Amino acid sequence: MVTTEETTVPTHVRLSLAHAAVQTLADDHGIDLLHVKGLALDPTLVWEGRTSSDVDVLVRPAHVRPLLQLLGAHGWKVITSFEAGSAFEHSTTLWHDQWEHLDLHRTFPGIDRDPSRAFDLLWRERGEARIAGVACAVPSVPAQALVLLLHAARAAGDARARRDVEHVWDAATPERRTEIARLVEELGAKVAFSVILGELESHRSEPEYALWKVWSTGGTRIDEWRARVKAAPTLGRKARVALRSVLVNVEHLELVRHRPVTRTEIVVEFFARPVRGMREELQRRRPDRGTQR
Amino acid sequence: MSPTLRLPERIGVIEASDDEGDVVYAASLPDGPIVVLRDSALTIWQEAVMPTGDLGIVERVAALYGVSVVEVREAVDACVADLLAQGVLEVASPG
Image (tube, rainbow over all chains, first blue to last red; front, side, top):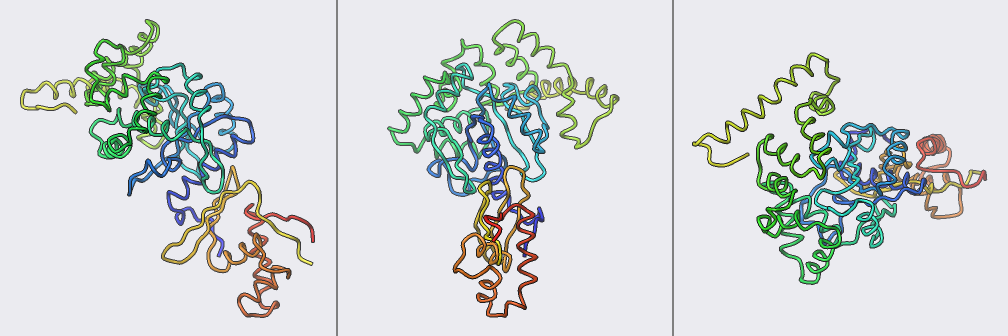
């Protein structure tokens, strides 16, 4: 029996084929990209029972625009832009009716080295993983481990992230730790990685300290916006971040409501958003509430 | 004479097995769709991409199931046409 029924396809199958589909496009058009996390992980970095829900690729920054055009021509739709994605503006999320979610990264939070040079370094040491029979480019195993750990560093209190750290760092051999530490130096990932080592406080003077503090321990929206302004490298960027803090993220609103939003809804959200932030701040300051979000 | 069939170069394939038995998920890349192959469709696809003899595909499938060529020809031809249309099989030579 031949079927093309979507409901009969398990998630890991769909994701594997999505990796293969994106790699095929990249191969056809000379796009450099590395498959990171999820099903592209080296088996030694995966603990039993770990599952994946999307496909992540890190793209050579100069190839991001052509790849986005290609993806668009092949049925992928952007559902969250770089600007709307996260404090780091590091990734955009796309959707395809066959392959589902793709997170396209142009950089990785925690890596402070210039994105093109960081990619060069990871690309130079790349390996290969066969996914659905297709040879996919992946970072070296220590680099895969570092990416996983940097991701865990900004997942405050997340049980899955904690298990990743236990498996990938706590249980790592001294040799593997040395390799990861070398990459931390070369990629400029000291502040973010200090979260994993429990040494973030020794980086209090760094501009990005506040942001990693919020990400790694939790905080209110206002905390996060303050940290984002502080971490922005130039006055212009600080002003841009501050301005965005009061604007409504229309893409996000449409994403959570699963439909286009009206002008009225945007206006309502414009007023509701600061109120939510204020409530969170007040909640945090209540004497009977010991811990932050 | 039947055309020679083969696995396309741009294809993703995952072999698995579940409660219903062996299954192959195949997709023409980079656009899909994902094709789920089970039972006789799986047998026909496997015979097409990894022939187990010199006979034509209809004859091989008939032999595997222990039935006559006449009985399976229509079904096999229809299945092959479907697999070709979905891009998980291609014609190597016109035969």
